[in-house]
Image 1: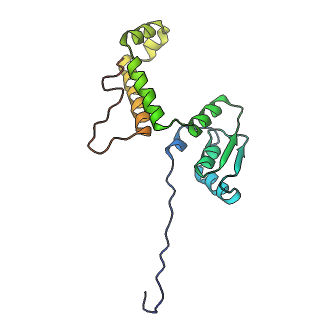
Image 2: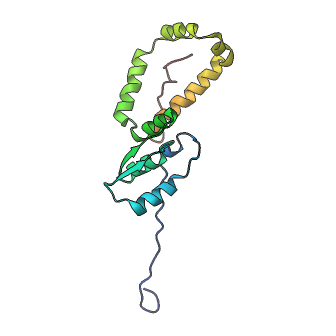
Image 3: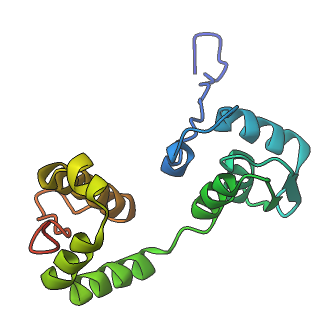
Length: 166
């Protein structure tokens, strides 16, 4: 209590943590998810259905799902469909880990070499092996870190450790 016998009030600011899927990919005419979040909160109740007829990269339907609303979305652009579907129907961690284990089990250096030999000459010129290895390594690590982060001091195991080598 303060000197006048009144309670002290503290303002608490609630900060929404940005979901990493919102930054999945840049897209034409995109807007921040905070815009969608604000209007969904004002106009819709949990359990309501949000319809976005021009969903683009899926900011509105994904934010609606995060806020416990159903979402229906469409877009004429197939890239928009892929982005929206990837964000709104991401695999659960056990499914992702099972798929990664399957890829590791099925990996065969000779099959990769055979497939590489069938590629048009453009790919051998445009993508030097070391460059491809670095890019794939980054992609694999970022996908694994999106699904699971090792504990501090833990060893991170990804497909670059004993997995596919180009």
